Image (tube, rainbow, N blue to C red):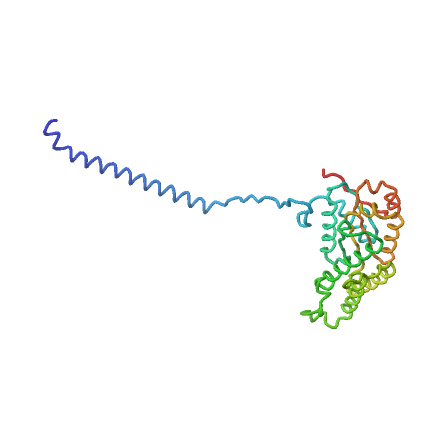
Length: 288
């Protein structure tokens, strides 16, 4: 290497290093500027948010997730408000249980509503006789009156002071009469120790239900309906005369009934006679 060139090599290396540093600094400035612009765009530009629709996965659909069946719900509510008994007919897993609970919720939440609704699952009864039919019906009705009319828990009715913490119920004649009716029914339907009560008679049911209807009417409720889910069991385990006797007793007491059943049950001899009694029917077909 020429000596004149060699003496300039350190200076050349320094110049190259300074040039590279200058380029790196320039890139950093540009990158910082681009990052700042991107952050500004993120904060100033509105971001569209896509929300997924509410959905319920499982068996019985809660009323707030129930969709469709608007025409059927309207028809059923019209029948109930008119005091007309009704058959709800649908195949297995067509959604009759969800429909019934949604119907009760829809009626009870409507402004100015004066109709009380109660739900009963016939399939859950340990035994099915004329007496147990009326026992479960009257206990379900008492439970709904406790919750909806007097805003107390059904379980609190058996306590020493059901009106504890409720100054508005202390000395309330209507609530006192309601408690008397509950205690009578409890004594007639609950086993006391080893002693089972005598069968709950239709006459007793009529007397108590009349008293309950008088109590709720004094508080602005005009009528009451019972939704009997899984009513196919009624057709399998009871004669048609017994079924019609049930319905006649309910009607005399001023109670409206909705029976949820399958087409197979309606097409039997039992069902055809029931259809003569139940002028109103709502059929749940498949979803379109």
